[in-house]
Length: 435
Image (cartoon, rainbow, N blue to C red; front, side, top):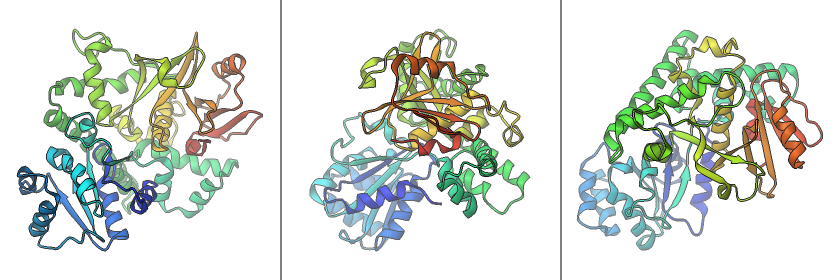
């Protein structure tokens, strides 16, 4: 399946100052597939070493971190030579071997000619540990498949053409909106997408996708027990389950900031839950949207409070599975034309997939703009999200009256039409906003 991140990897391959690459992301977002494809298509050979599958690999890194010896012993284990000039070495599930993580520093310093990549579903948890070679590796992020990648996976060349042309006709919208509703159910986890575009019948596809989503969620909870360390695994599991519950309480309007009360017994404040939230954030299972109150000023990070934020699930398909929403709810648009919080979660996922490292929202008095960001030209741009056919917004008008922005963006559930200073696009065109 086509992933936009593949071009980034090809660019990495050609860098003069290339360092070992670490691909970070939640489990089952396609890290192993993407790096394997890189090795298969762009190198003479690829050597894959999975630290979950082969315990013997751990022993190689126990003696010392002499990279020449390590490569020689890895070659012996697989019974095949490794050409350090032309081959790709891939360390998979590397979160299970901290010394292999540390070794990347020495591969960079002692064997810079070697192209080496690594992946792990919980590597984000090691970013602040002493064993992680900060400054000695190139860190890339992979998120679930975006709507655009989902559309490419459909292989519907006509729909893809309409999407790429940003066709604004009502007929084009109906076709693309149908795909969007499918995406709201399926989400962007590659295995679920693969099932959806298989040759199976529609009912079998629906069942396979939901089973895949539930299996992935079960896998997360197993990870909590195995990798939570000093953080209570039950607390992590409970908090993740509470996110959809809190989101769905608000049926109309913007999602509200996350409330800490009643999430866990006798834990009522951010201080009580910060380690649990940080764990989920480091595992890339949630998207935090920080709240900016009052006049937005650059840099946003200097004007937010650490205990005030919205929290979303990192994949809309998994959000729907957690809420037990059916395919019928989405495809027949009976879920309130896709409730406001669900559309907001979708846009958060799209913005992260576009490369926005941090997400922000704006609020003042009773007005709220779902997202706000700074463009490469240092322009502050608000994004209003309206899931239904009613697109008038008092909050956006309030923002415009207060701050007279050069440009605003509105993402809606129907065909949009640009106005002076305002870009209006259907929700599924979030990736087309100017960066």
